[in-house]
Image (cartoon, rainbow, N blue to C red):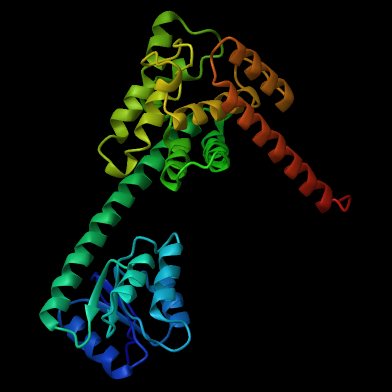
Length: 339
């Protein structure tokens, strides 16, 4: 006998969660007739485990179940990075407005009321499955961009790990400053793809160990614009694009590509830029050795006096770096049995 969850062909996957076997089986039979691949779960914990292994394109989830109810299952699905974009339809016999508000707050995309109208069910299933496929295409496009960015980073042995460090430092500073979650997420993405425009920069310029000529500098200074152009088709990168374009601007207007000044520079771009400068100073490069952290921060402070960086933002960045280093040193001491 073939298990209900075994994949037989490329088909959209639907997970049905209901503690009543008759209701669950009836929906499963109907959806399999329509060509969907169906898996079933009878309670909250098994639903979460199945969601992780089955990777459904849609979850049909009963609210009233013993133990972990459907609202909590939905919240957990939406809190898990791998499944947060999976559409969830709550099936309920509840009609009160507050119950539906709870469902919306849990992250559900839609509701179906009992008894279920078959035509309504199929219309919503088709619509939400189609939406999930579009979302998957966007995620695939993002993955391609991330892979391209990492391949560019790999061209230069001196920048290995640079993008990941920037993603971590800039998003952490964004959190300390209390930025909204969508901007923190944009900082993480921008940390990876900020230099993607260097795909258009020849290795002879990118890896040159000596000073660049005026023409070579012109080519380098084009990379933020090229990077923005590469990422522009992705609507999910709306908040990432200004970071890519402006992460080489300076507060006195001497940066590039647009010579922005002070508050004209998006705060997220200014955050990434500080992380970028600090990482460049504290890692070996073809033209100089790495500086210790304290020296790098002192250099950045002098640059702030020249008007390059926002002073309050740099101070917040300095405090974060000191705290990070103290935490790292404390962890090392504990591991060595000295803490």
